[in-house]
Amino acid sequence: MTARPVVYGASDRPPRGDYGRAQDDYTCAQNFAAYTEADHDTYHRLYQRQSTLLPGLASEAFIAALPLLGAKERIPRFDDVNERLYRATRWQLVAVPGLIPEVPFFTLLANRKFPVTDWIRTPAEFDYIVEPDVFHDLFGHVPLLFNPVFADYVQRYGEGGLKAARLGACEMLSRLYWYTIEFGLIREAGGLRAYGAGILSSSGELPYAVHSPAPRRLPLALERAMRTRYKIDSYQQTYFLIDSFEQLFQLTDQDFAPLYAQLRGLPEFAPGD
Ligand code: PHE
Ligand code: FE
Image (cartoon, rainbow, N blue to C red; front, side):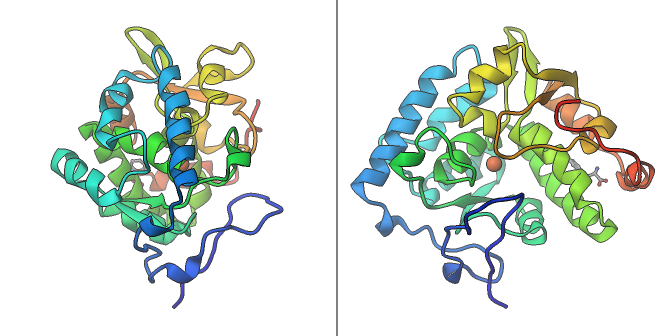
């Protein structure tokens, strides 16, 4: 088998990663030699802009763990991050050429391996990119993998994904990923904060998600989130709130098979309902 590119959602562009580099499990070596000084500079400038936005908008656990990614001036070597990450929660980063199909993705997560795209956006995409790049994947996702409860949630999600694949329920489960790991909000002592990677890696959506009166903010309920469609190319119109990572873990610590059966065939909610 050779690894094939994959796209989620509608797009006019083919995926840009070189899937010829990937092994059967879709992982590849981080192509560190390919980074130019301009690439490192893009990372530095993205990191700089985003890290100054975090206070008051990002969850405390995220802010506390961010320095564990290493120096902000250059794209880190994943192996370097791994020394700290593995010690903290037994997670590891693995490089991938871009988005990968559901089953290989779930398999990696179930094994506490987080796939990180190794290439970085062009300067023209500084403000917005649809496909995840190394900045989104590292800056957005990796800090919370240092949090033991969140780290366990992501592994459980991977196991649940393999089960959902057997049950033909990937679409329902992927909405839970979207509305928690990518776009989740959390109520903290200081107020509403973001913990979802798609928010945390976006300079526009971070203040929008926390403060704008435009989007709906609903307490996370599995049935509601799993029935809510989402847009991948605009700010979210609905966010789901949790009170703690423990709550998120407990809410999802049940057999989803009956839930999938119950939800199948029920009408969906539009992104902004
Ligand atoms: N409990 C879910 C199941 O039985 C698995 C899961 C755990 C899914 C955590 C998402 C998050 O399928
Ligand atoms: Fe992501």
